[in-house]
Length: 446
Ligand SMILES: *Cc1c(COP(=O)(O)O)cnc(C)c1O
Ligand SMILES: [Zn+2]
Image (cartoon, rainbow, N blue to C red; front, side):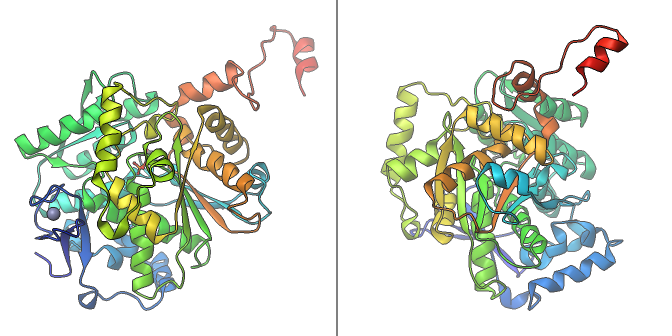
């Protein structure tokens, strides 16, 4: 179908390769994750990143309008006729000095990459535009995903935009209301499983295999290709320069994996001179990555990841009947499917992992709401994590940091309303009760 790209197994003992015309979500030979690789000599990649800026002038072309496909030479696995876009990636990189003060950073240093501006209100749209384009390229007609919420909202939106059927699996009672409302409103068949996200993830893989449905979780390597564009837009927002640090919440670890791949490709292509460092933030109630990296010392090790450490860790979770719990439902995941790719990203970006409590998350969220554009709880883990890294001195006050705010403030109204109304934190801003009386009202105004 194309000689510009192919799929390749990340297992160094396997290295099997497959055509991009195949819809796979694991290596059929060994079961490991697949990567998209490019034959760069067959692609006309601009010599300098700022050449992509020319496309702002031709935004009547739907691909130039997209904040993903504007960078299409960097994800060149499908012909233009198959590309599905609904105008994703019109995001803002906001420099924010008030939030910088909260994390003890200098003026001008902190930038918030606000992915809540995407059509479905989260960064997932960057991945879906890429994956649905592949789905159209291989002629898929039905799709499915497991979801903590935002994947289902995004899948539903993209599926109906390009005439593909979709079924979304969500954990019963584990989904934020804004996201559930979207899945239903956008017409997805929504199945609530009595279980958590990890249960959904297992079931959806089995269902997709049995029925030949197109899988849209981040196991799908094409999704990660689209998510690379978040990094391109941060670089663009900094005048085509890289920051010192990228901070991102860690759930299924698709973003962190995609970001590492984006930077290593840009470096290989000579489009950037240095690779920023990556900080991945877990919630303490779902901190598999933090445990494995910081306590069990799990490393990428050129692809020879010590599987026994992972197996033992998961066996222990199973033995304890462990189910992850955090108010940041988007990262309430204990068996992250992209774990190994994320280890590679940590290796490439000299990355670090931290975990933050729900209390820290909701306080940080209130600060982002008050001084920024607002976000959902998982996104606020970045600011809570950055605060730790500043206190440790690992990140300097004058370094340039970009935090990825992954989802919109309206995604999870329950957490927000409870925080403020029930005065759960330092920055709660509860409504004031007042009689229906002018003098009393005037006295109340502050
Ligand atoms: C999906 C999601 C995450 C987790 O991202 P991963 O790529 O799975 O680590 C974080 N925040 C929000 C808002 C999400 O929707
Ligand atoms: Zn393999």
